[in-house]
Amino acid sequence: MEVRKTRPEELDAVMELYDQGRRFMRQNGNQNQWIKGYPSRELVQEDIRLGRSYVAEEDGMLDAVFCFFYGENADPTYADIDGAWIGHGPYGVLHRIASSGRVPGMVDKCSDWCLEQWPDLRIDTHRDNQPMQRALERCGFQFCGVVTIEDGSERMAYEKLKK
Image 1 (cartoon, helix red, strand yellow):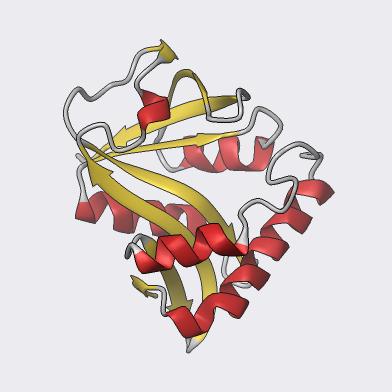
Image 2 (image 1 turned 180 degrees about the vertical axis):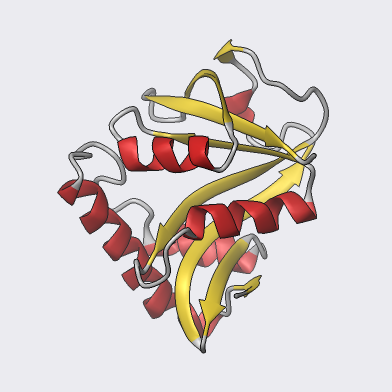
């Protein structure tokens, strides 16, 4: 599996991966996450422009897409948590991960890649996204508490430190 930055000409294929992610959520009881067209085409274009959109490909096929970035206070919504983060310095953020479903374990593979880039990784997911919560726990992420995102809704927050 190769992870690399998303190319602008891959926007349509990436949006299809996000559509697949939405379908998977709905089929698994998560009716409340990634609604109202989220993530929008414009948001994904901005991620690509800023160099924080990545794809994972195997055998020449795009199997996953995600947004990854890092730094001090990388995600302002993580500043206030009902709970406690494990790490206390700059951290990486993994957002908007979606998979084709063709290759199992893409959450594991993409989060492992992110941890190779930055040793403290945070991620959040909707309370209704049970498959993602199970995947994060399987990958060794620890539940740290609840954060409130820009739209006022709550997310389950997880963190993993590189060993």
